[in-house]
Length: 421
Image 1 (spheres, helix red, strand yellow):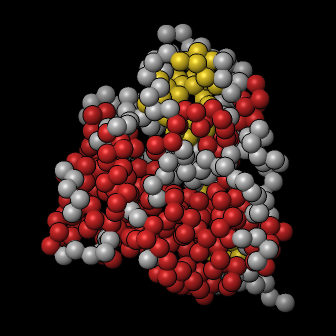
Image 2 (cartoon, helix red, strand yellow):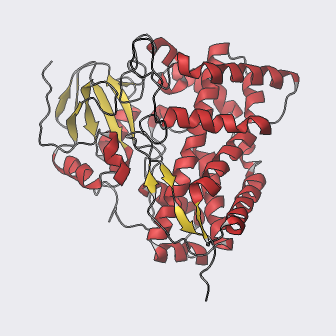
């Protein structure tokens, strides 16, 4: 098929582009002139070329795509830009993330009964103690007054909070981070230097059965343990919810990866934004900005997820562009969050911004199930920083994840003790 795109349009596909941060100038060009733009999908970093996709960059169009599951399917081709191996697609479709209504709603209702705001809020005290403890340790361990906040605080903070909520034993918690890095960091040569190859010599998709077998075996063992020794945690609730084995495995995968990486990506992004906007940080520290409102603004400027894919179930039209059945449609959250049609002065950080209809947690039937838990963790972390730490100040360049999917920061050197007089 002839690609319907234009060679002069900005490239918002190449994962290497995102090593310098979301390409906001390119996003604006597309929003203003080509809001639904064809993007080629060449071979990059050893991953094979694909057929291309439609990039959706305006806020209103993104919301329309995410709300209309009948036209824009999560099931037909899953939700990542790259096409999965056709042999893996039935397996990938088991997870709630890659299903459409009504089946999606049935599964979501099951996990929603386990993932209640009351259960999440019961962990607030533990979350606050962990934030205070990790920040104190970072300050005490920093010989030169500086620390990489990703390694010292935010990776462990997100991981341990999720492990507490899920009921993962302390000895096993490192496995959650290992599995998350494997799935999320697969495009970044520094995170996964050598992709695992299949029998045909091609890189294995990190969501393939071969690479998830270890995680699934653990999920089954943990669920069996929780049935014998129940607790007030998510895995006990899921183990007792009547799910079949594949559904339980996929929920464990979704909670481990999405539940961990949402905060793991958003927390350092928020601290970086505060370091780059000292006047706004002072509003937070002094109490002039409400922490809950501040969290949503920090999520707007640094959404943890950059993009999600849908597949057109039928011929349709979006923003005047004809989309054919079977074509990929990819929405770009960071672009929609900076759409001038919705947000006044979108590139200005305003911790008091109201209203703030950001789409960092998506929209429609797939809106993030863990948004309440993520907001709680982020608010507590920023509050504890403001209470005990100096104004955030970069002491070196941050390093961003090479990914067109996750808006990750892999290194964030910040001052953690006050400068000597």
